[in-house]
Amino acid sequence: MLRYAAIDVGSNAVRLLIADITHSDNGFNFKKNTLVRVPLRLGDDAFLDHKISERKIEDLLKTMAAFKNLMEVYQVSKYLACATSSMREAVNGQEIIERIKDRSAIDLEIIEGQREANIIYANHIEDSLDIKKNYLYIDVGGGSTELSVFVNKVPVASKSFDVGTIRILDNQDKEETWEEMKLWVKEQTKFHKNLAGIGTGGNINKLYRMANEKEGMPLTFLKLKSLYNQLNSHSLKERIQVFGLNPDRADVIIPAAEIFITLMKWTGIKQVYVPRVGMADGIINLLIEENLNKQ
Image (cartoon, rainbow, N blue to C red):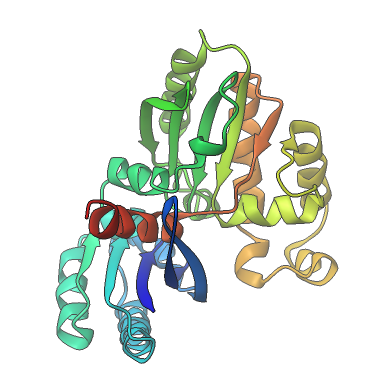
């Protein structure tokens, strides 16, 4: 059995996905074997102090050492480890990478926004899209939002903006960044009729599950707005008790919904498809493309 692993060091959580690679007539696919998520919240340090604290570095080092041990036990043959927004912004990001390498022999790469978007595309969601529609792809993370416009299943424009859930919670999102995002998205979508949304990231996945939509059906703007109002009318503590949300999900889900709602308003998008994949899935697909599909 061939196994690949993806490590995603995000601003909210750090994830390890171990996947079993299978081969069929139409190429290589993967089945999720194990997913471990550790809510380290590196973004709180990175966006407020522009530096990750020693306490969080120690937690990250322990997490990566544990991931390394798991990959060995599962006999993973290839892995890719990527860090996004919080590590891009931390002045000690490079030093942390060296310490991870020393302690656990894991090579962690700090990736730029465009590479982050490209990894998320590696999921090839466009293969299942309706050719008659055009799409705005929205990936909301803790530190940034990646936007891409797909026309006839081809990405025609994409950009990363420093608007993310942890950044908003820490009041580190800037008015001008929102304005820049608004101008960009309006400019890029103004000639595209029949625009629908595609949403990825842990929060929209959770909102989609809460909406109880039938698998494959889109989440409508009205349903999303009503979920948001419902969640927002409860305190953080109540969101954990009433909706059964994890503490590290109960706070970020509000700004995530706000980002989606705002983008849908700006573009007139009435529905968003939620394929429930993310960065870690994209990394596995990228490894398959680079190592197997080229053979």
